Image (tube, rainbow, N blue to C red; front, side, top):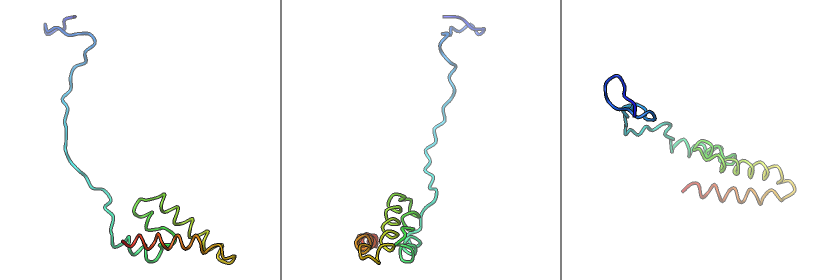
Length: 95
């Protein structure tokens, strides 16, 4: 141990301790509106915009892909399959 100028022993590997301040606060940032989510669902649900708004990006991409692929291939009748899946998911979203 070495001695500092105050006469107190100090170990060379110890750092002087700083006071620690702990705050227990919860901050709510960006609270989402349920009403706006339903309005987006009603008007732009087949594009998954309501999912993007709610922060569910993966689900939004799935909805968008199902909608675009479904509507783009309806003329060969296969598009009704992804649209059917999309519409079932949209009905589930109501609840």
